[in-house]
Image (cartoon, rainbow, N blue to C red; front, side, top):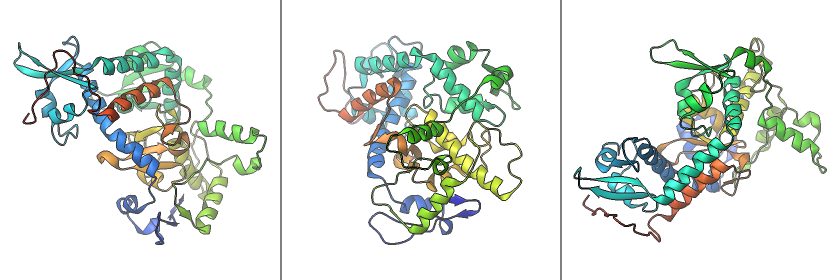
Length: 390
């Protein structure tokens, strides 16, 4: 738990009795020694292959010259290392016959890959779900810009998280260009860069409520609510990994941190670093920014590297990864699949979103196909399976 320059976390690792002090260990060491949550680890174990499938799917769908869309196996093989296909593209494709259909093109004398009908239908469902209510997409993007200290972000940063935010793949045209009263693109300080910003008149009229504020209202409205309103007005929901034992000192620090006033993610923070309480409030605000960002994502999860692209825009002076590690009651960070992925803990129950949405539901269907693997695979007409040597 962070409190200004005090950055210690006292806890018993799952099944152990050694106390790990956050301030005397590196981030890498702490990631390896912290209490793991088996539910999130199991979920991420499934997702790591899904992410590879989605990357190949995007390459296939991005090929406008083929009908139906397809890519050559040779092309995917050249990208094997970048896509983390450890045993090569051909071997990976064979693992998912429900998703990828491999066929030989005699005219080009080489094998190609396209999506199966089932995978194409899921892709269509996700696209329809995204386009069904573009007002939600506009709201989500406007909220993202409102969190920035300058009410603007580099367009390339948005491209990093367009899928996480549930934006259409043509969001530049379908969202930005079609809402000129909300968004404006301007030239960046570097060549070939653009800045996405809120239109000033729209900025003045917007008033957003953070997800955590809605949670506080719900908590206080419960009939059996025994929480003092003064106790919860600056609090966040906390839950911890199974088996994580919390010392009295740690609990006391969390309670003190929960009471600490701070500025919300949509409030102006200018001039708030003048005193000690201001610095501590900015630190808690960084947690609020990360919490709200995750709340805006479709699956309440994102790669740490991707959210780091917004650190300066959000006025966060702290290391994002350390921020997640120091608040295990709110965030869970997994290192599966050679990437650091953070989940919003409160949004999940038993490995699924508590409040799913149509885009999430479509993506879960694709995950189900990934989990099927080779089981019950139906060979399609014209399918030529590649030999093990390939």
